[in-house]
Image (cartoon, rainbow, N blue to C red; front, side, top):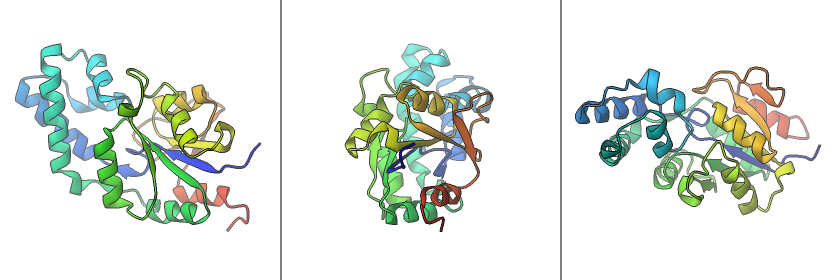
Length: 216
């Protein structure tokens, strides 16, 4: 097994907790347009997929989609200061960076939003960020395209890359790309049952220790 030289992270539910912001934005935006799809039994189970695909999965009427999307992302921008890092993320990512590990984000968040959050919360890391805007239509997670692109932008092979996610679409994307996968148990999704390829771990620091050949 080749050593890991590139680690790719999902953003929401792995590095940052934005669930409360997403819930607020969704509930307010839906209420304003008269749409009755509660966050917890609707939107939440589809987190990780591109927003247009979530609206499709939830059968949001076509005439409502553009208004809902615009208002939702306006509200999330307004509440950006309420998004925070999970414990040990800043320390763990900094240590990976210092070890020379190439780092990337593969997210279903719009590119501008993802970059804004990373600049605010992890400003000292040189990230490669891949979002659905950089991919062909319909090729966001669980398709492997984003992970393949992130690895190529770092000149890393897929065998040398690892993806850290928290939703089933993350696992499926990693499996399709042929990447090793780690499942963040603190995230928004359930444990990946019955999948031997899905190793579960409880801290970014655990990832750092496993990646450090000196075990320090």
